[in-house]
Image (cartoon, rainbow, N blue to C red; front, side, top):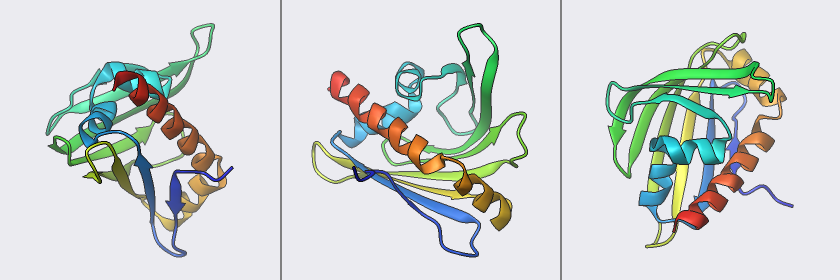
Length: 155
């Protein structure tokens, strides 16, 4: 089965470009990235903080069934234009990965469809390539499939 989420990485560059079309109105797609209750549903993680505004910040955490923290991420929101754009940093805590910069753009295609384009910039080409060796694209596609499912329930 072909992945609907496309990940492009040009050799020698510090960035990746992620694109995905959704059968969701752009307003609902944007809410899936800016409303804590919806983020938790499709990401499968706990939202400790999500200040969806310019100069806001966020923190996500995933624990195993015994309550042990397996994953924690945080960042600062630099730009927040409803239904259009989010610019933020993303840091996975307790990992060798440096902070990355993310540009999320939400595009209305029709009344009921939209596209997300994410540009992620890494500190170095090596860190970007290291990320790409992980099951990053597969995990992102799975998360976006779940986002579509959650969005379908909210329509």
